[in-house]
Image 1 (spheres, helix red, strand yellow):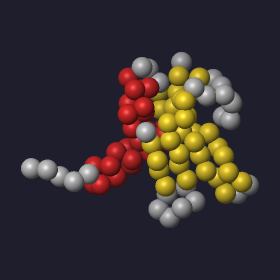
Image 2 (cartoon, rainbow, N blue to C red; image 1 turned 90 degrees about the horizontal axis):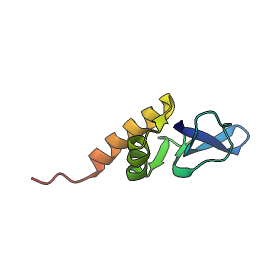
Image 3 (tube, helix red, strand yellow; image 1 turned 180 degrees about the vertical axis):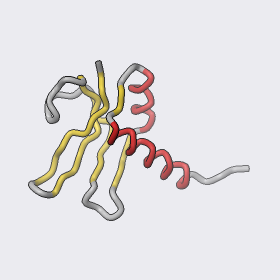
Image 4 (cartoon, helix red, strand yellow; image 1 turned 135 degrees about the vertical axis):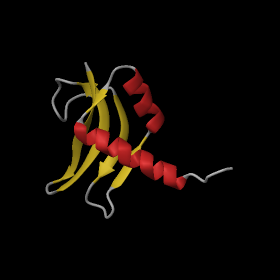
Length: 88
């Protein structure tokens, strides 16, 4: 089964993360199928960059996001909606 998970990168006490699609049982920093974004919690505000079209593709094909990644997807969706101009 596939999962969309966080993969830790960065230096000691300065974490940054890749949002990746991988097998659910694989190690946190093991091999992955696709990198779909990044998350940097050390910035103010936290920096979230996701390729939403690829995230939607993998979810449609059965990948399940972890709880944290679900929260990041929702936050990224809200910021995209406020950044897009409203046309009437």
